[in-house]
Length: 207
Image (cartoon, rainbow, N blue to C red):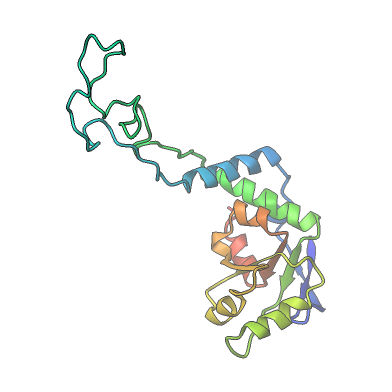
């Protein structure tokens, strides 16, 4: 299984052999969906919190007499049926949204999306991207010549502050370390760009 390696001007340079276990993996949509739900659920934060009767600040005085008013009996204003009262069975920061998914399944889902990118011509492999200085204009010059849809996920083998900060102002480009490739970003961005060295990191995932 071969793929074309491009230079910085998006011209064909040479070809490279791809790992068929990664880019030729069968596409399992059910597993990809499960991995996406797993990622989103485990990233969910508990921010909703409601006060109980003891935490609500209010007078405990009985608001009117028990009998002879013609109204229903009523205690303090902190009652849950009254405005600004305490909340019954409300969220308390204790909800657990985490989902379990083993490592082999997560890798199969990742390989499935990478295989789909390759088969749908949404994968580009570039030799390297070198910028002379940290400048957004230089990043625009590089990505504007890209003959693909401008919705790019750039996976780098290691941190590159010049490339990351130069492209950080571009709304259609996201840089990420190849070791942190995830289902959510791969599905969000149409075009995946891998630096040639990033392939070696991916190959290490196959055991």
